[in-house]
Amino acid sequence: MNNSQVAQLLHNMGTLLEIKGEIFFKIRAYFKAAENISSLSEDLQAMSDEGRLPEIPGVGKAIQEKITEYLVTGKMSAYEKLTQEIPETLLDIIRVPFVGTKKAKLFYEKCGVTDLAGLKRAAQNGELLKLEGIREKTVQNILDGVALIEQRALDHENC
View 1 (cartoon, rainbow, N blue to C red):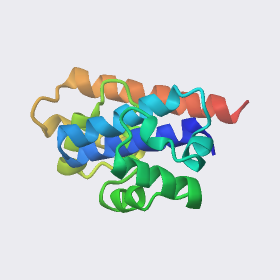
View 2: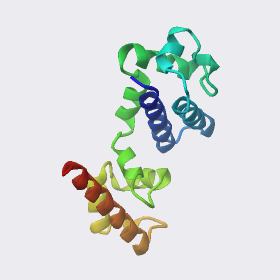
View 3: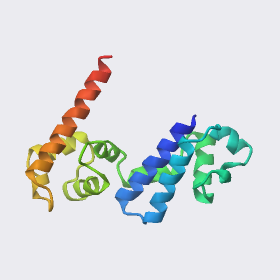
């Protein structure tokens, strides 16, 4: 396990909490901890073994416990519980240009969109246009973004 894996997990947790509608300060704590862990020059496991996780800015007791659990078990039960409430595949939707957490939440709650294929279907069949604030240009941008991600995936497979 490396620092970037833990940082990515915490960042994902912050994003999913944002979609869920958690309070801003809790969300920000996960993003800050993720950012600080990703920029560490020391190994997170070594810091944990030495009891120095609290030295990392943004790593309070709750996040420290989650990191320790992950370093020991390879799992984070709070993340697993969260992904039972909010589909982890929404993280893929947020990677689409012009779709942030607010739109991902809107598409999930109003159209049941949980993944890229569902987003593409909802855009193509006009479901997204029924939502307040979504116009044809936005839908076209989303379809272009999905196509870009699909092309990258194909290019990656052919490497």
